[in-house]
Image (cartoon, helix red, strand yellow):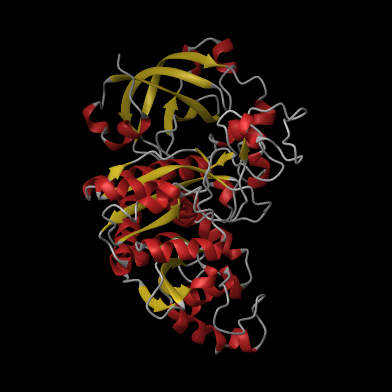
Length: 482
């Protein structure tokens, strides 16, 4: 007899009504030795199994407890009780896996018993909870929608290296890769580590971005995107940072800054709409959780919109496009800045904006997603196109409520001589990136792209508040468990 997922059964139960089917899953609850709430991970909704305990041996009934796994054969019938449309009258129950630590596991799996922080220490069990089941089903849908959007728009998926000799950001906060014996590393005559003897013959790191390699592919394929793991050795324990995270980076030949902004807006709206259309049950659960969470906050800190309302509004509204210069004027003249309420006061043009400034623009001033563009050249990366004013670069950041920056991108500097000069100004080794410079020699074209951190988007879509709760196994300072 073919096994059916609980999601499929609940969505189209009339096809199997009054037929015997097989279901498998984990016990969420067992009431009165009669009613099993079974869940198989395919949906947040449980399936009720009705057990006539007189028809089963006592030993089997004793083994049915929270977190144990079962295989059940039974008849699908319309439910007479409240709370469910259909249920299964069990005819055969097979215990697939006992729960040997019922008290411990049932406590961990109860959302009111433990904090999300505690659940992070139980990564092998937290997938069983409603919260994380919903989060990771939505994460899957977000990832699927990303591939779908780019495929529909004739982009090619490119895998860029995880191990690289290039530092795309110029920040230097990278994890080194070596096969040296760390207790006996070869040295040069000057006493430095001799990386020429290392596996790759040079110093290499885990990548912080696939952008530079992606640009080379766009110069032949036209439209490409990367989607892979990236790494930053930033010693940060904030709710917004991870040491290992996933980045999506499209690069498009012949696009300028305006095209890039249009692409970013269309892309975000497509992905969010996909989640709204395909993750209704999980979103409704997280929406209620979000509402309860807001009640515990001071009134001034509460979100103005519910989770689903927020997502719907982001899709419906046109993103406000504002130059960096205009944004600085708004922030300089804001009550928050004049009354010293910003942790980082805005004093002059050229200030690098912090999350609190970005969120003020989105949540208080414009009350809509904002795209900032044309930033001062000193606070942006070397590869961004220098504007005609000589002061700004064709950069863009998309700012979202509750998040701040969710996308960062730019039109790239396509002129060989200007790029070379900027690399010198930023102290970027032109010999190390000879191949990147070469793309400006052989038929260079205007081109643009951006980077989106998958976890930040999932954070926004699910209403979670800590980025560690939207990745299955978070990697943070002093934490590489599991």
